[in-house]
Image (cartoon, rainbow, N blue to C red; front, top):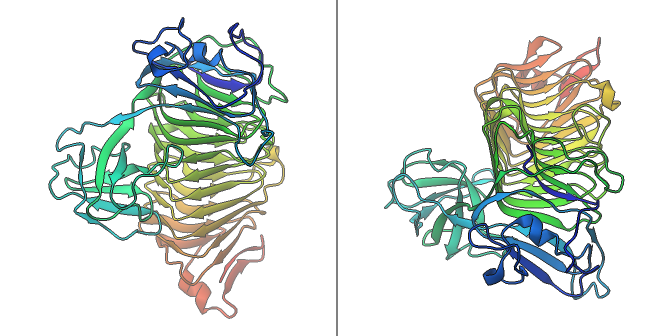
Length: 482
């Protein structure tokens, strides 16, 4: 069976009331509790029951903002196919998009309350995290990880529907919340704990073929969501995805630029991939922000871009202020343009938190990686061509890596670390077979072995004491230097 929200350019039966193109902004409503597919879906009081019925009413040619608004509830997925976004005639006044937007609901904690007033807000840590305190709370430590906090009043309030002041919680004590977001609020602000109330939990039957333009991947058994449209303004937000044993992939993007935020994706299937972006994505890099991905320990790729062993993709993915827990690999890219990861947290990956193959320029800023086998890893894979893979790292901490914090084993791979900290790693930097590392003076990341160059132990101090400050292995031209 297949659980899928599918945005692909193809042909599905369209409701007879649908017109060919939009003539103004349009919102259709869906309510799993009380909706009726015989309604026109044009108001919350006349909502459709299913997402598919609402989508079938939409014009396929979109020249204006179009929103599919889902109330809280459990939903089957749907195919959202055949849509093309156009530049409006008067681009200065309006713009077009197709947006599937769910509903957040208050999260009720095991102890303490779901709302309150901050009594303290720490300075931002590493441009990424802020600790919010409410001395009146009695939360169970660790029980709020993976939920969200919404700033409802005071400093940092209140954002917009498309740019919300709602942030993932990555740690908590009885009175403190550690959240992903820089300087988001101050003492005296009101807050509300929230979670995704709109959750996709059941499946729909897949079409036998995909009619998308230049499709490089088609819906497969177990997909939850599939985006493959012409244009760039496709968005999904405030949605929960529950991946079970029947689900092989969560969100799939092909030939579309997806803007996703406030997603909460949980998997109890170790083999599942959360967000999959196969080959040839010409519309620009998808963006995921302020989202939570929680996987079982030991297996599954949470975000996979560039396919699963095919040729290089045309684009990578941008990740902002998101939390990735467990799985085998949190982010895998075999793309031609790489990754941008900013303000994220990775915890507990059994293979690698960030794994790059193919060619790409990867930037990692203001991020924490902890308790993984490898924090950042690059290996040779000539099935995707020459691996010109570069990692730029700034204001990032990689700690408690059981194998190596950074491991580069490809002759064309490199890393430039400007500010990098970390402790408890088995190996700090592991480079071999011609890989290069340029290390800034502010790099202090340590390990039982601080640096391994083609298997030979070394250290930052030894490199910095050399004249010039470089240690290399002429057999492979492997080197690290300042």
